[in-house]
Length: 246
Image (cartoon, rainbow, N blue to C red; front, side, top):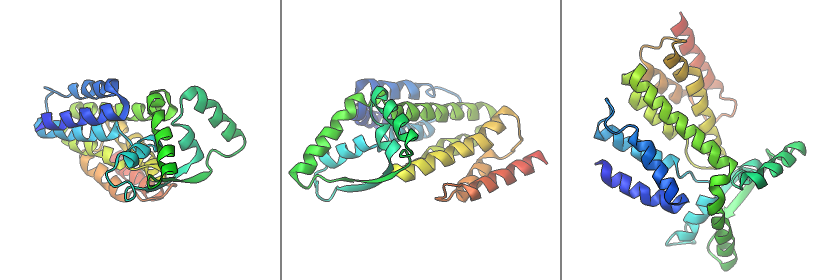
């Protein structure tokens, strides 16, 4: 069950970012092999989600997918980004100063629409240039940020196994909150951190007592909406915390 998933993921991740990236995937997955509470089905689910999280659809990846699609015209994509998100895929030595400059002039949050189109020669050339940035992705601020949150997700799975084993699957599935690109990705990641910081970590740390953490996680996820203010999500977390404190 697990081996075919891992083999496919290794190929995908090597194509995404190279052999070292695929090796990192295997290293991360090994921490759960043979660990109490992690049967083949659970390992397989982690393997699938980990592969997805290690190959997020940043602008470089979307350019690569559109360029490699069998039907290039049908695979064209349109994505909305903040200027800071486009710059963050550049090597930090280059992207960092640009981000600082855009912050100073108030342009970091400016929204831009990017069309990924391989239907004509000019579009394909542009995609090839963008795909070429893949070799420097590992030096980018976005790569470092993605790597940090994936490590935190894996750490929370580890802590669930120790602190509240009945919540392991619920914690594993929180990775599905972070999907897509641009605004969708940004919202999902913000919601994920709000859930972890407001409910999951405090429970593991003993700050609050939530007997059924899995159900609480489900309730918060149900409350999540495409709202940058996270009003409904934060209200739900606050209500669960209030009940736990009472």
